Length: 254
Image 1 (cartoon, rainbow, N blue to C red):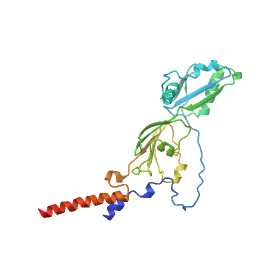
Image 2 (spheres, rainbow, N blue to C red):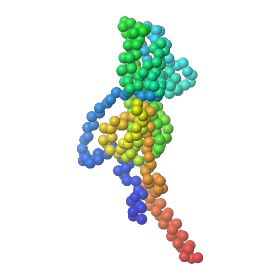
Image 3 (spheres, rainbow, N blue to C red):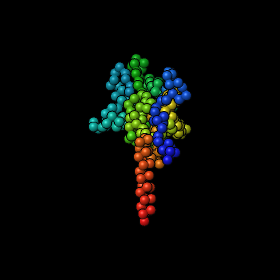
Image 4 (spheres, helix red, strand yellow):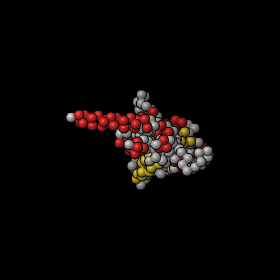
């Protein structure tokens, strides 16, 4: 009974985020972030805005609100944005189709500016171009509050923000081995991160990227069906003992 009790409870240390594992509890840990510019991948949706002195000359490049007026911001981003196809290309009116796979936003801005100066405008037009993602889209499955796909209109989203937006990980979720399925030009890779360790903030997977899939697997206590807390486990054991005792008494009386 003692062994069952110990093994069936979920330890407190498995439920706490960002622990200083192997360090003094009063220590201060400074984490220096090394941000890397995001590089465009297949299926990304980009919003591209071009501004010049005479804005009427670039209306064709900035399609906004051509769809239903009742469309959500996500739907507008999908229809008004430029989707990176399976070959890594986007197609812009007048400029045609060109490759942006693996480019940063700044590199795409410079590429479009050079194309416009070559074919459409002169330096005196004072071209100003902004390129951004039309929302950061990701999917969360497994032991989270509300599994599904989310789109956040932010430039950067860390793993805790992403999980918070799908309803948090319940006690039965394994915070020590959260899987991130990420898309790369050569294919998809699966990586596992430990959210209970403060060093997760140094991981290249701490900040999610567009089209990431986050999977939180259940702890074995859930499949066993025992309680999540000591009180629940005691109640489960007491119920089992009560049933066993009742059965024994009934059989002995027969």
